[in-house]
Image (cartoon, rainbow, N blue to C red; front, side, top):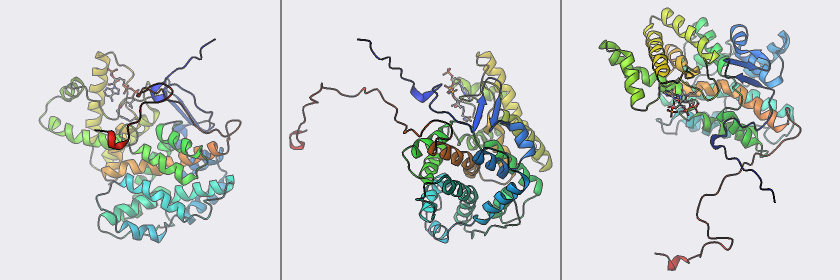
Length: 397
Ligand SMILES: CC(C)(COP(=O)(O)OP(=O)(O)OC[C@H]1O[C@@H](n2cnc3c(N)ncnc32)[C@H](O)[C@@H]1OP(=O)(O)O)[C@@H](O)C(=O)NCCC(=O)NCCS
């Protein structure tokens, strides 16, 4: 009898598990596309909400469609009072990613669309999540720092309103625009770990909020959304080397020889520069000059150049800077605390997650919905088909 070939692929690298029409990466050429459009063009010419519409609906909105979508999002920005009241009793040192993940099912309990199974109801839930995730992050930050949360300012666009709700100061329009570009850059990235988590959860027909809570959990890990914050921590490590005029190359060498990684470099899919990093690099330089903090960009470019040289010497020419290398410095200059950097990733990626959840639930890119159910190779104890001899509790040592 012919034996079935069983291939085990730990980490699912290179395994295609579904079709998608939402985004595409060419890792060899450094290309990222949302619904057919290049990321460079979207970052330069579209707003985040325009991109969220594109991801959700599959086409760029017309002028009146965009206005209606912006109004729809603005109308549902406020979060329920019971969530804000409950935040006041949560431990103030709770990690903002845990708070965000725990808050999403709370939003579900208040959503009249929760049990509806139509695509329209799912799009409405997506709009509410896109509108409210920033408000949750801002409300938690204010409460943990002993201040009252602020209501949204509906005269402000999406990113500007977030900065207002966070800091209580009307932001510089250029800085708000830069944050909006960051949200465009992080909006989607094919089957990354958090998006796959969202899709896997809803493949059981669980609701959208359950899927998003799974996605936020996956994003919180340091190999995924947590890397931008770790780049900022790395910069504090480098500072004494720079101040004492020791060579940054020595610092890079020291790290690599200890088998440690340079945060914000390398990527599971890109084997050349990440196109998002190229845009953020320019933004970091420009903001540094504007805000009188050019040293972040200078240190990062010095580390990048030294690391590229060292990687080359070690024959690893495909490790380049990724989206997280420059984004930490950009957020820092916007006054965003290090532990809110990953939540900001989430307030952007929510547009991609919800689009993928809808694509998964309604099988928009394939014949019919499928429940994810991979297999694992059992390598534990085995005593044959009758099972191991069961010792009653009293008979065990
Ligand atoms: C993102 C990442 C997990 C991709 O991993 P991957 O493609 O699966 O590659 P691996 O982690 O298996 O690394 C392959 C080799 O390159 C090395 N490498 C990869 N990224 C590296 C980095 N940032 N610094 C130093 N070495 C690195 C690994 O040590 C490994 O070396 P080895 O073969 O001698 O063991 C990895 O590059 C990484 O950990 N980067 C730092 C964290 C980060 O920035 N994450 C955000 C991603 S957007």
